[in-house]
Image 1: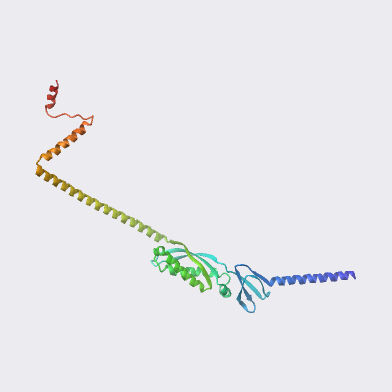
Image 2 (image 1 turned 90 degrees about the horizontal axis):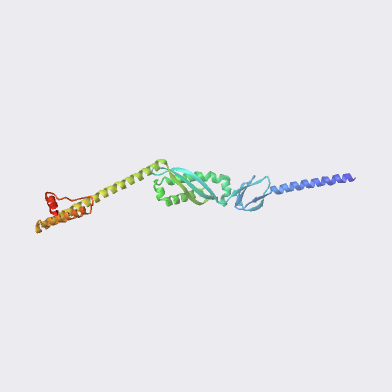
Length: 278
């Protein structure tokens, strides 16, 4: 009798434990949690994707019939590069960085049309499309001189294009811009040509200044000669003799200061001077 009671008790205990386990499993599968910065979209086996987006917190669902799909709605950065042709047929390498997030009210539509990896499917393609369309409107040098206008046009066009896919862009920026090797060589050759042109211009200006200086010098010498001629005509040859004496005096003074130079008068006067010394 006691053994039957024990067996019955153990059986009831096993049934209770089994029931508790099944209940816990059912309860666990009936709950799901949406963390901060996330939203959930429910898929129902009978009704399909539900139109209402589920917010943060712990929520109930019908096990097996319903399944949650979690979306991260926080702003995420995306970077992609594009090789585009300019208006003057130059190739330009551009790198674009965007900050994107999904439109929360349109998450069911995004899930139906694009899935959870919506940003990787859409942003690179529309980014390349917009970059190529905008860059083709400018010459290669304008991408540098008019960069704010280019960035604004890329930003406005890309934001408008992303809204067609229910994606919001908080920021769009061109982070890198470089030209192809051919354009770089052309720019370098142009700079060298400009430097050569400036050098040639300087040489021409220098020659012109030297020519003007020579003309002014010749005019000055001509005026000086005219003044000397006028003075000679008025005062006779006395002025020329005076200048000759002054020049001879300067030469004599210079020779006198040099210890290695001796002055010997010409003719026989030297002998007369020696005899006179005796």
